[in-house]
Amino acid sequence: MIGTTPKPFEEITDALKGYDKIAVIGCDGCAKVCMTGGSDQVAEMAEKLKKNGKSVLFAMSPERTCYVGKTKTSLDPQLDKLKEADALLVLGCGGAVQITRQVLENYGLTIPVKVGLDSVGHMDTLIMGELAIEQCQECGECILNETGGICPVTKCAKSLLNGPCGGAENGKCEVDSKRDCAWILIYNRMAALGELDKLRRFMEPKDYSKMAKPRRLNIKERKVE
Ligand code: SF4
Ligand code: SF4
Image (cartoon, rainbow, N blue to C red; front, side, top):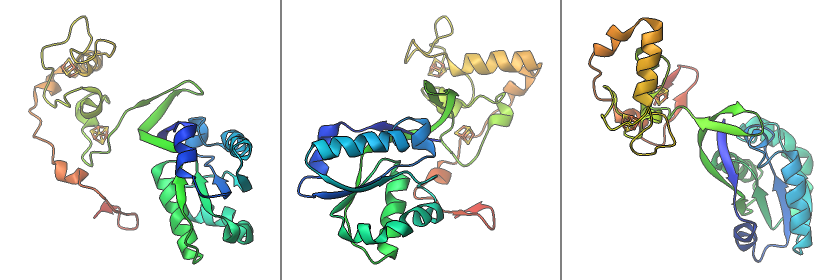
């Protein structure tokens, strides 16, 4: 999922300065899991905006606001209200904000779309309602087959591909002593699998051009363009 954190309310009201009639759109996908933009947080935000003197035209949370089809289906019945809106506030990731803008443009509406959350990366939930961690940076050339299913690109502070830097102490990273050294985790995992010999294989430098943005995924042909 895409991890999100709430922007300070003052930053949101600043972004909405001069706009009175607001529609609030959340996301019942990732933002719901992060407890930043699901139906509950959308309702809370609508109340806060009202107390702040705004008129809230409607507040809703599509199932997944990053999916243009679902966002459009949710917004279609609200078209008359959308035409009255001075601005939309989206409690979703940056993708959800831009998809919402695109849906509005497809309706022929030029309405400011403001973001109420900060997107903080691809996260995987460890404990629901408590903790998610970054596991993957979508580098486009996955090496998990070589590293026991633990990603050094993401979990090593230096993204080293061929073993540890040598600075770890008591299993912790020299860059941040609260985090495990990724390469010690990898070593232990490979040892448990009886595959330590595989770590002797030299890993070629990654082709970071595969991370050049913006990437486009051709789903039909299953390739990145
Ligand atoms: S190597 Fe790491 S960053 Fe790259 S795709 Fe695999 S898990 Fe993601
Ligand atoms: S101590 Fe481990 S995780 Fe930290 S930078 Fe060095 S190899 Fe990477």
